[in-house]
Amino acid sequence: MSRRTPRVFTALLAAAALTLGGCAEQAADPTPAAGGGSPAASFPATVGDLTLEKRPEKIVSLSAAATEMLFAIGAGPQVTAVDDQSNYPPEVPKSDISSFQPNAEAIAGRAPDLVVLSDDRNKIVDQLTKLKIPVFQTPAAKTLDDTYRQLTELGTLTGHPAEAADLTTRMKDDIAKLVKDLPQRSTKLTYFHELGPEFYTATSATFIGSLYALAGLENIADPSDADGKAAGYPQLSQEVIIKADPDLIFLSDTKCCQQTPETVKARSGWADLKAVKNNQVIALDDDIASRWGPRVVDHVRAIVDAVAKVPA
Image 1 (cartoon, rainbow, N blue to C red):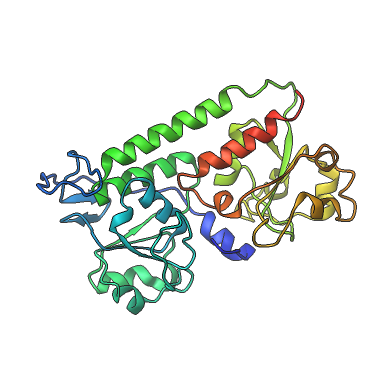
Image 2 (cartoon, rainbow, N blue to C red):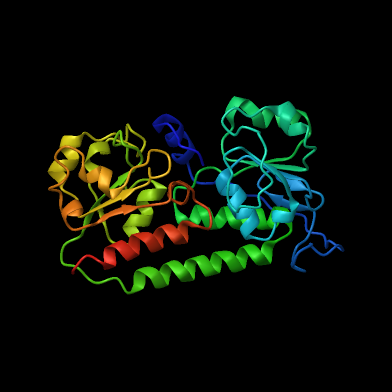
């Protein structure tokens, strides 16, 4: 994902959990899924109010997180185009289709049999529906369970249920192993997660915050959005951050804004912060830190590795 403005970033991540339900009329699909499809895959396949009569072979993804999910469950060969923000894995079929300003004609020109997106910008869902193009929404996750649910649903819709189930199991196991051996502490370590050099951040009420909570960390931003008016993404003042003096600082603005431990140390008043003096300013990958796909395991690993280096 290219660098988000705080407003766009909030719109991408501060979304409600999925509430899709429904049941499917199952019929065996005589055609095995290419690339290791499971015999358990069957069509018609239904998730919520969307039913696909057959396995989609021309998927357009307008969500960087969904693109990562599709490739991770083995549906990559079925993806024929992705939006201009999808950059992982490297082999994604890139296009100039915008996820921020989606154009129905440009999408329809790809003749997709499924469009996957996160946000209904420009009323694109209605536009595509009128063109009889199936659309599946994967809203920004609020919890890891939302990520697992979306992987499962995409597995069902693309004919890769077994691969999706295996991936979610591995993710759960990997995260459990990562947090299992963290040292016990009498006092919680505090942290600041930086979305940008303007000091926008994420509270514990967000998906990002939930990952830090797994490691037992306390978020210095929580009091600043106690009333929820910032939807979990408040802008802190430099004075608030300095006064809180966090044990750890995590930078998710290293690609977009070239922030580093060195640039943080050079900020007025920051050199004396515990995190800076103890070399606990952690540079993250912007994309991994802003998406809720399979690479959340890598984000948790970065958090755990940083916590493990702080003396108990």
